[in-house]
Length: 186
Image (cartoon, rainbow, N blue to C red; front, side, top):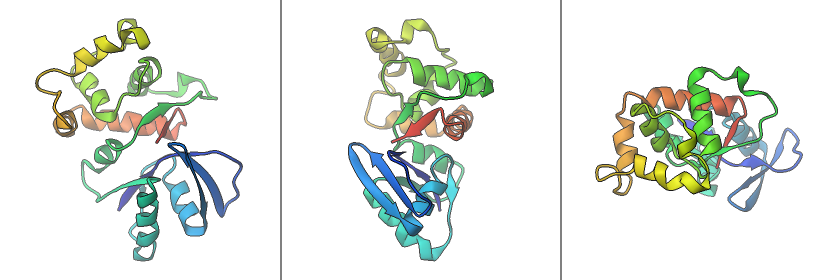
């Protein structure tokens, strides 16, 4: 089973105890749950241990992880249920590759939270980050660029972008930003 953690550590934690905040709720994770959540914090984790499955289901029930059966679109499907949030990075963005820099520019500057399918759409259509799309005053321009009669219906964009040639590259870039601590997932 693949899984990825959601939320952020909100106070100093010790190895066997992690304090996680997500969507205004605070959680104290101990023992096996803490280890499992930490394993998926900055990457997609894999766990096939039947003994730990109940702990993973509990974490999913709390909304602290997304799980999927391993296949070619599992990582994308998990990310469709996550909000991608920029953080104030300690390190410079010069460590990012070209794809990560492009995705980072979208995430950091748009003025609202783009989801994974919207990022894939922008990449598929080869729409480059530009100041005309950035900020709270220009959000409507970006929304009208992404959503049209073919993509406006409920979750149709998620389904279409799952089959996009750009999907793998964008997922890899988003997971690279997560690994490099440029974003968090909630």
